[in-house]
Amino acid sequence: MKNLIRFFLGLSFCFTLCSASAQFDIDTLVYDGLDRIYEFHIPASYDGSEEVPLVFNLHGRGSNSFQQRVYSQMDAVADLNNFIVVYPNAREVNGLVLWNVSYEVSAPGVTPVIPDDVGFVDSLIDFFIANYAIDTNRIYTCGMSSGGYMSYFLSCALGERFTAMASITGLPPLSVVDSCPSARTVPVMQVHGTADTTVEYFPSPFYIGVEGAVELIRDRNGCDIQADYRDYGDVDNDGISAERFIYPNCLDNGELWFYKLTNATHTWPGTPIAFPGDGISYEIDGSTEIWRFFERFSKDPSFVYVPTDVSSLDASFPAFPNPAMERVFVPRLLEGSMYQVFSQDGRLVFESSAPQGYLEVSELPEGMYYVSGEGYTFRVSIQR
Image (tube, rainbow, N blue to C red; front, side, top):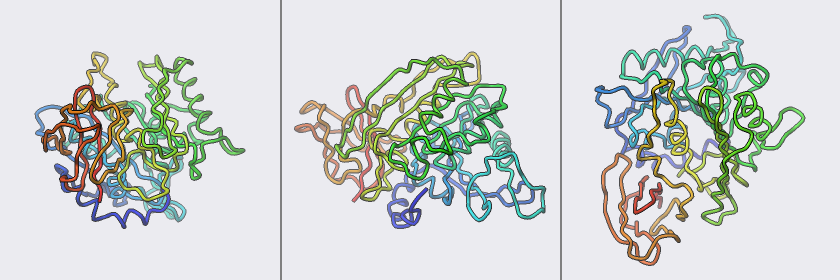
């Protein structure tokens, strides 16, 4: 993840966003003699009376769990949908902090240390199952960049444990391109910008490129060749647009979702941690779309998908600017129609009518909100 120092410039904004979170903690798990740090978020609605899904969200190269948490803003989606989200920390490998996406690991006490990240994540799954009410049929992994590579690796190495996976700006590592040992086919979601210069979109002499990787997954997972297509367009006129391709009928009742973000760079779509020229797509919200994908799948054969609140989010509903300061313009909004604004934890903040196609948000404190009206719900960030 490039330009990580930018995260620290926005920490005051981060704390405003995080203050609305339900419960979160930082802890350490000793695995293979190493102290492995991780953060996690428990939604306010969790009381242990029913089993909830578990989502792993993995940071990119040179980043950490705290930065990924702020950048992806997944805690808010967890609160709305009652799942636990875990942000593990990678360790340094050959002078770089990144995930080990190979089967090569060092024995305990042997240097240089090549950590067993698969074993670490596997142990975290065991820990959360032992200490929380976890639906073991609904455990998912996603990540940014190196975390996306690792999510692909985990879906092959621990395919019997993970229900589905998603990658933003990360690709299948070479260790799983030719072979994926999992006996179970894991549903995949891939999100990538065409202007990504860190993990390049187009083919090179060293890799097949993003669309080549999508075709490889489609064919290996036995999905339909013809995709269901949706064009989100460029909702805020910033030169960045989004398209979605859904390849259905994969093996083991799976699907393959691919988001092509034209002119987007090596960034998490929808993040409020943005600076001029970052090349972020606001046509979709990365964390929301990941959950919209995850919630469709369970390893329980009797599972029937029923959309939850977040599935009503219409990422193609034009609303800009986003982040906003005083007003959010919604061209499709009927003049005088009613809308409601909710906080991250689902509290109704206020209800009003929309004059002349815009929503008035000048009185809202900085933070993340959900706006809902007749036939639409979308997420908006207020930043000043």
